[in-house]
Image (tube, rainbow, N blue to C red):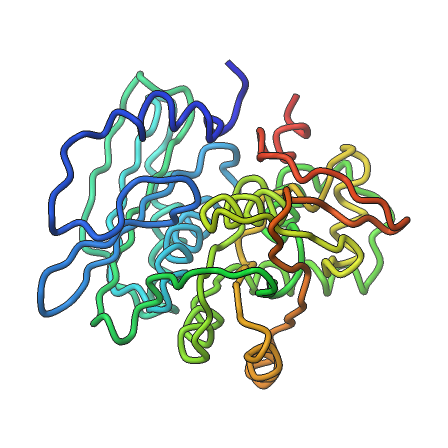
Length: 328
């Protein structure tokens, strides 16, 4: 099989379509475009999300916390705790595990999120370290963004810049092969490494009253946009020129022939917002020094990309993330 996540069609065929029992307490369960599940505990709703880090070992502790916690933020709340599962091969050292856990604790302490527990094991079932983090958040219905009906004409807003997480991973894993980076590029990389959390913009989106949010992980900006359109049962027209991207990302992805718009982009939040709330959303992001841009609009036609030449190209379902090209 091809390396990477199973396709949405495969997931639906072998998993989603076969889920028969549904507990009445589960408000949001498995599905395409769903970042996390929501369970109703009457007084509060519990939000749960789980994500692994498998493709890189560089800074995997930090990335694992950011990626999982960002899913919780897509519901407009701050996670309060994480659980960690770490599987390491026999050749791993105690120092390897210690370094990963120190990164996990550093990020969780900075974000004020408690490490609740988990599981750590040495096993010959893996040939390199596999790390998975499950995040939990909670809040009342009044504070959670549970998703409103998306309508034609609603806007798709993106925070920050395309390919943030992918840029960080590529630089960490291939820095000896990357040439001609300027001082400005190195400053861009510092920005990237410090911008992988979307908790702040998630809280802003909830406060403004956006209709839905989705953090852009595997499949990048275009993959996440397609998933949001599928969930909304509408199309979305993306204007490629409106997608913000850092120059350093273009430099780092170019040698690998990677499309940065389909590159894993943790650190980016996509938000669906009604036109009348566009200005206040962008202003609120700007006040927190978070870049925001309108990159598309929801339509009743098939999803498409309007490129720089004015051509309308189909926006296809996400396949394996572009990041994997660098490891072939």
